[in-house]
Length: 232
Image (cartoon, rainbow, N blue to C red; front, side, top):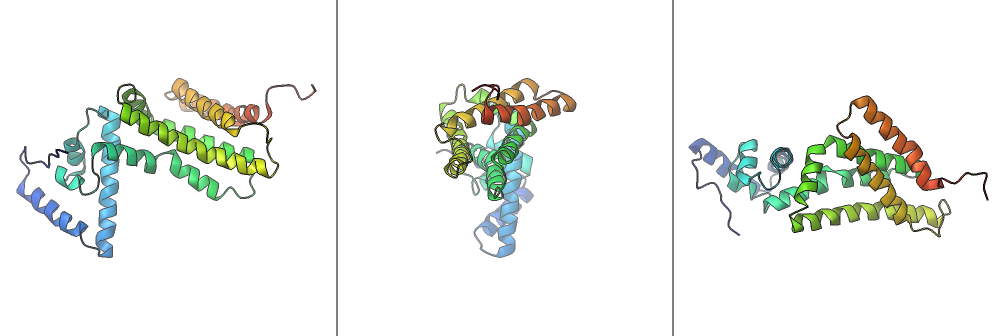
């Protein structure tokens, strides 16, 4: 793989010396240096997400990201192998999956409806907070098959987490056992994404109304259906 470490353009001597010093620190196991390494890694991810959102994945370069952090391109490769790995890591660590794990870790005796409201509420919040990144991914997926494959795999992994939770609750009698929970998961995620597409740029009051409708009636419809309770 051809990696341009910044030799094709002028890098100030002071910057080169700073980055050489930091590269040396990366190879050292001292606790304070480990903390600095983690902080630098987060700075690189921050810059990558910001630039991918603003310029698009194809147009944003490693050089742009390095400039955004104030380091050389070569130093980025001590943290991430490629631009693609930067994007995949940002999906894994900065988006919905992290929140899913936290929500489920405290699910305990909460009702299925309460947990679903937390999950879908956080999902749609993450979409709106990262709307430029979400839209960039949707666009790039149309012509980047590898990116599309990876992104769809992440979606399926998130769906599996929700599906496994519903299966556990079904096993103890909280939900019907004759219906595949994947249907409910797909309906909720698709409705949330559709709400984002239509109202992601709406004023706060309209957005809040639509989210409340989704978390209230939307989840109720998935759990209980639309048929009148008075009917057999």
